[in-house]
Image 1 (cartoon, rainbow, N blue to C red):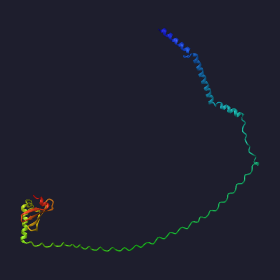
Image 2: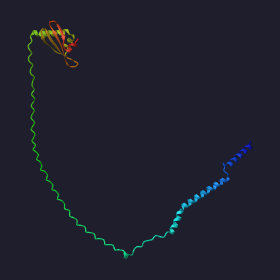
Image 3: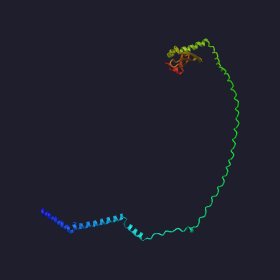
Image 4: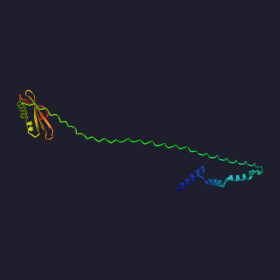
Length: 227
């Protein structure tokens, strides 16, 4: 089997050699020579360029064949025209004297105004005591007959007897009195003034009393609230 493999490899190598696919030693040596030649030429060109190249040689040959430039000689001093003398400087004009303008005189200060004499303030007048007017005396109450006084007391007793709540209030220290006003006929308006012990305010308890029928009717808010 090894012999068969060797034989197949030699046939394959021979076919590739015939087709030109496998490079030979001659072709390889020719390529090396070409590469070496190209490298040598490139190195030579680089050396020539660094040393000035062909331009320096051309400049030297051109400089040798070019004649030196002609220099113009200066004319002799006899032929030179004399320079005209410089004009003398003109004298400076005399400085003009500066005349100072007269300074304005300061204005005199205005005369001081005389201050008006201060009059002494008048002495304060003694305040007079204010007059207190006494209120006019109330007109005298009309005289009430004994019979009329008895009827008013009867109207009061009728209200106290028929209202137990009011009977408890009139016996307290807050009771400030009562009054009875006739309204005509047997009708009277009876009012009791009683001071509230907790708040200190005075309340009015008012009834209408009819002596003929012995009936009472509460009129004020506080009278209606009593039991």
